[in-house]
Image (cartoon, rainbow, N blue to C red; front, top):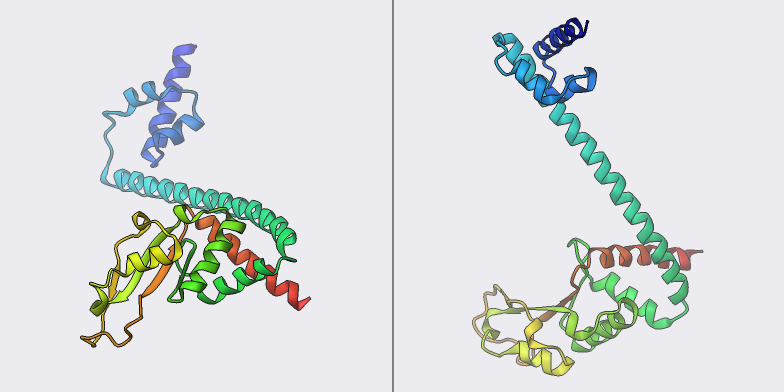
Length: 226
């Protein structure tokens, strides 16, 4: 009786394989161990048409797996954003009466990066950079020693050591400066003797901080419209 049952299962497994079912598909439908199934099917002859069917089925399984993974990724991302939004709302309600909070949001709205996937603020005015650094410390919890820095400046100023000028003026660690980006220009001489470039301040692991800034900006709009 047991032998007949096993023969019957093997016949079904072979039939399913010829229809293009994967080992995992067959195991889901039949009470058989994968090692046993592999032993049954490893030398199974398949026609060209059966091979094509099996290939199509494999591709379909792969596509379903990708779609399922993408859907799970999207659900997880939406859940993370929901949690982040709720925290951002709590903090917004806590800080909104502080004028400095609104100043920082407005500055970032005007001069901050929205296209990159991280928090970054750029300006050529040291006072504005200083204000943003103070704001970052108070509302995002990053000290000056923790921020990333990058200077953007035209080539004629390459030997002016402008990184040190910024570091000294704003009490910033030189070690935090990334490689300076020299912007192309048709001018071979300095047009503005006091120009020291444009400094970008960014934060480590700051994707969530950027998303929080976007949430806060929308909340600020609603706050004044309502």
